Structures are given as structure tokens and as C-alpha cells.
Amino acid sequence: QFGIERTPNHHYRYGLNLQVNNTEKNSTANMRSDIFDLNKFNNYTPPINTIITPSNTKTRQLRGSVNSYFNYISKRGATHNFYSDYISLDHKERVEISNSSIKHNGEISIFETQYNFQLPIDLKHSIELGAKYTDSHISYITKIEELIKEDYKERVGALFFLYSAKLKNVNIEAGLRVEDSNREGTELFPSLNLSQKINNGKNSIYLTYGRRVNRPTYRDLSPFNYIWDKY
Image: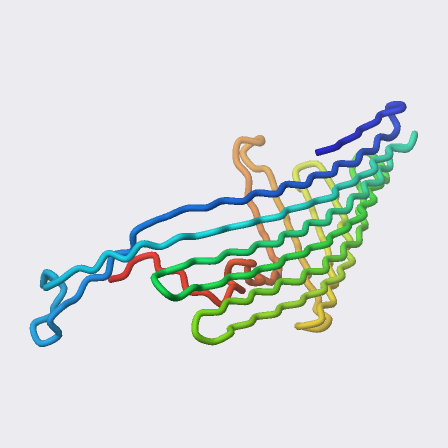
């Protein structure tokens, strides 16, 4: 791991961080297989026999990341924020059971960069502009009796604008986000937040409108099954 951060003066600062981690692990376990009489089976039927099979798992995981950022504040109060991240993960696993083996290979690489600009117009009004780009590549390969492969690529670019106003008893935030994705195409995501204080500031009324998109997580994109409750 290596990192550096500098603040030459109160106007700007920047930093860089590098991390590399390699882990290897061998583990053994006993896999239990219960045998039931299908003619008499229900949820309360005990097994008529149990087979214990030893297994050996070998795992190797290599992870690396690079992070950098730059922040600048002008004399007028305008702020410039820039950051970029890159994460790479290589996971290999081999499970040996009796005379057979199961292989899992997974690779994940994610690059993300963003720039934000915020400018106070006066004490009550401000605007914010920004751009963001994300490039993700996920690949899973597993081999039991046949080869199963899943390859997922996603690229998302976005531009956004936000206007904020703090009036006497009303706060206003209005924004628009434009996204372009290799999977969904170009979409617009407007947002509006209004709040008003009443009863001499003791209570507030809120009105919110927005459009969003929920994309699958990287775990959701895995072709493997995760069993939380066998019943």
C-alpha cells in the first residue's frame, strides 16, 4: 500500500492512493449428504442414511486499486472536485470432492471518474454542474460437468445540473441528470425538492419529485445460486 496527500495551501489539495493485496487460502471441510426414502418423505422425515464426503478448497484472490483526487476552492468560493477510481479483482477457486473438482474463476474491473463544480451566485442562490463516467467489466467462469460463462460489460456517462435557492421560509432544489448507457441508451432524470417552514420554524412541509434507475448489483449479476433458506 502506498499513499500521498498534499495541501499546499487552503485553496487546493490532492492525493493518490495505491493498494495491492494477494491472498491464498486452503481449507478442508466435510460435506454432508442426507438420503431419504422418497415414498415416505416430508419436511419432518429423518434421513435413512447420511454420507460424509471430505472436500478441499483452494482459493487465490488478487485485488488492486488506484484512487486519486483533486480539490480546489477559488477566492470567490467556487469549488472544483475531481476524483477517479480503478478497482481490479481476480478470484480463482478450486473445490475437490472425491474424484471430481469444481472450478470458479471471476474477474472484476471497474473504472469511475467524476468532476463537480459548485458556484455560489450569492448568499441565497447557487448552481452545481458535474460529469461522471463508469466502465464496468465482470466475467465469471465455472466448470463442474460443463462450462458456464457469464460476461457483463456496462458503460455509463452522465451530466447533471442542480440549482439551489434558500429564500425566507422556502428551500428549492431543482436538478436534471442526463445518462447515456450502452444498455439503456439515453435517459433523463429530473428532480425537484421543496421545503417550507411553518409555525415559526417549528415544523416543515416537504414536496419531493424524482426519477431514478436501480441497476443490479455485481452480486446479482453472478450466474451462481445463493441459497438463503432451503425451505
